[in-house]
Amino acid sequence: MLEGNNGSGKSTLLKILAAALRPDNFQTITIRGETNYPSLNYRANIAFLSHTPMLYLDLSAEENLRFTASIHHQSCSPANLSKIFRRVNLEKRRSDLVRTFSRGMLQRLAICQLLVTDANIFLMDEPFSGLDRNSSGILIEIIRELQSLGKTLLITTHDPTALTGIVQRSFRLLHGKLEENNI
Image 1 (cartoon, rainbow, N blue to C red):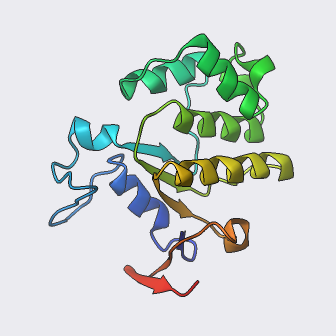
Image 2: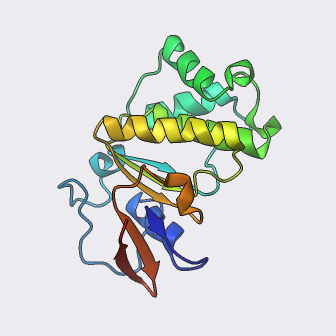
């Protein structure tokens, strides 16, 4: 878990790690032995849930997931997509254009994007934003499942209590430096 005040650089750090933003100056970024930043192999290992969902509003929910899967070189069977949509209570809206979705629905669809990848590293920037209690519970289940599969997760949050009992290590970003917190 990564904590920090507003403006401390949490989102920027995750964007850099996800290769969604190029750092101004760096020596080397190494993730799971991959140092060829930001090669296709590097990017294929990472699933990124941005604070602002990265969705195409004029595509359907299903089209968005198929696109995400394709850029991660994954295929999505109709059965797998149905399972993912059911999991986040979007099955009835899978054919609807994303621009018709509420904020919470957009966030749940963005969470679905994580599930169509075969990434080893999951970067989540404020993943509970816009979620109601039920949807937050679903996200907690997904986080626990990813952990049980040996995936690496880095999650930013303003509410560390949401991850009580889940977090293995906690860091705070303060004045551009990472400090490890005691759990």
